[in-house]
Length: 82
Image (cartoon, rainbow, N blue to C red; front, side, top):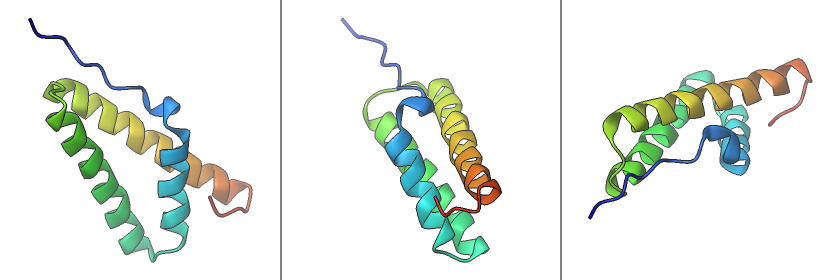
């Protein structure tokens, strides 16, 4: 018997989201983009190891990226860093 693994939605990973966003502020714009990409790729790798299906990984990665970018913009609008 196999079970279908469903990843947690990005909004349940606030600590991860804010950690990625905070680190982006410490880097140059180019390095910040690379950090976001590496973080997303790392999360996708973990989900693949857990047997999550690719369409779910893609959806999860898109949600995580949107949440990180929203946290960055919110911090910019509020004149904060992370």
